[in-house]
Each structure stands twice: as C-alpha cells, then as structure tokens.
Length: 391
Ligand SMILES: Cc1ncc(COP(=O)(O)O)c(C=O)c1O
Image 1 (cartoon, rainbow, N blue to C red):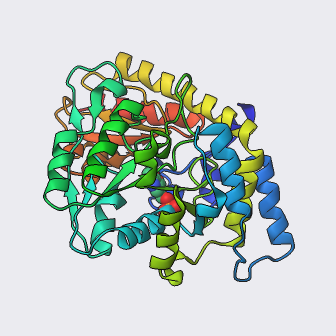
Image 2: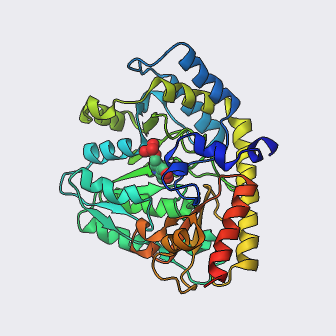
C-alpha cells in the first residue's frame, strides 16, 4: 500500500474537497463518505482524456455506462443487469427521488430504516411524501454486525398496511456496514409484494465487501424481489469519484423500465457529465485490481480499528462491518451523551459524523471513515483516545 500511504494531509487538503476543507487544518476529517486514496490509474487516464479533448459540452448519454455496469454487476456483484433497462442519471439520490415519484402514489409513505444515510430521511419530503421511520432492531451483546442489526419486518409490514408503498433499502448498509442475508431480503420481498409496493435498493457500496463476504443484490434474491426492485448505484463511492456526476437506475422487467422512462420527467434524469460517465466506464471495466487493493487497505484499517477500540477505548464498542469503509462506533457507554461526534470534534480535533444525524436511534454513535492511510488513521485514533483520557 505504499502509494496510498504516501498521501499527506496537506496533499489531501490541496484537492479542494469538502471533506478536507470544511473545517480548519487543526481538525482531522474522518467524516463524509469519500475516500482519500488516489484514483485507479485507468480512471485517472479516462478523466485526463476527457480534459485533453475538452469534453465539457452537454453529455451525450448512450448505452456505454449501462453496458459497463452490467458486465461489472455480473462479474463482481452477483447480479444480472439488462443494460436496456438501465438509465443514466446524475446522482444516486436523484435516481431514488425520481423512482419514488414515478412508482408510488403521492400520499404513500416511504419507509426508511434507521440509522439511515441522512439524505434518505429527506428524500421522501422532496417528493411531497412522508418518511416513515422503522428503526432497525438491535440485538444487545451481538458479536457481529450481522447479528447486531436486523430489519424490523413486523414494523415494515405495519407501515405498508398503513399506506406506505416503498422502502429505501441500503444494501450494503451505510452506516452499520451490514450486508443483509438472502433470507432477510426474501422476507422483505414477500411483505412488499403483498402491498404491491417497491424497494428502491441503493447498492452504491456493493463493490466494497470485506474478505469472505459476498454482496447480495436485492434484485438477485428471487423473481418477486426483482419485479418490484429499483436498483440505484454508481461507481462513485467505491472508486473515489463522488464529485463526478453519473449514476444508474436499473429496473428488472421491461414493463417497470417502460413505466420509469414514461413517468420520469427528462429534466429530472438529466445531468450526468462526460467526465462522470467516462470515469464510471473505466472504473467498471478496468478497476478490479485497484478495487481489490483498496478493499485490502480498508480491511487492514478495520482490523486496526477493532484492535485499538478493544485495547484503548474503554466504553466504546465497535463491530467490524461486512462492507463499506464506514465504521459505526457505539459510544453510548462513554457518558458523552447523544452527540459524541461533536464532542470529539471539539475536544479531540477529529471529525466523525454525528450518529444522531442518521436518525433518533443514532444518538450516542459516531461514524468514522476508514478509507484513508494508516498514518491518518493512527493520528485519528490517537486524537480520540487523547480526548477520552483527558476527561
Ligand atoms: C448509501 C449512499 N447512497 C448515496 C450516496 C450519495 O450518492 P450520490 O452522490 O450519487 O447521490 C452516498 C454517499 O455517501 C451513500 O452512502
């Protein structure tokens, strides 16, 4: 990992991104879901080629992104994707918003399971619908995230019985890092089908599974799931290009795709850029080797975090995720109250996302971004310990 570890905070700040510049240089940023790693060579070359030819006009969207994604999905994600039923959109969040609008009635609630990626809590409102919070069930004393967090299937069924018609699924799950099992997803599919509803499955973190873990695409669970699934994703998260707009919305039947295309206003689908599309194509087509290096680096950081938390941070609980580079730290026993993230930023000069931003049951948690160098991780861990010890 020598190339990755050569990065310095100064060089990262010079990139100009929000992650490294929102607060002053004295605060170490381990918050927003953006990697610090340098781009995969093929992705950097694809971007350079667009810059060299000044490819900054309105993007001509064709089937190359859908085809590249379909090949990648087959090869890496265990999912069959028909490129003809895949639509290019600028962002995953935009795809989710349009899908809710097209497939569900205006007065139908949208189930969001918390702790949730914070924007999921906002999207229903943007479409004029209500977010219906159905918190994940937590098993106290669990030894793995897989055992710790479960969908509240009874709660979800109640929400659909009361009028919800869609659920935003995060598979793998930001922030807790779980990959839901086939059985759990099949049970969800039976409920959603019973109410003629939809699952909008955000699978942006799918390429980032940890050793021994396979991604399980919701649409791959069974025909029932596929028939009511909208898969939304992008290479942006796992290939470190979140500032280059390009994402995809995949339907899994001809009829659903037709309904999506006819129901969505073209202005709401428009906005992917040539830079984003070329970078996505390069990532999906030539990014495997780099992706595996990154997954190994994240796993090494995961193990280091686990070791450090267990040995050095009494009162803090951490269970390694099955996917994503996001660590969901449980600080409920530290006595720091509902917002330990803000406390750490103030007292430790290390910025983690506040758990409460992910919903009420995120209170007492903080989310730490592991996609960084070992030196930056060590610096961050030292700051957390220093602040906790100095209380
Ligand atoms: C689960 C999830 N979905 C979507 C996004 C953002 O995707 P986009 O910028 O394409 O809307 C993120 C970013 O952190 C995320 O974690």
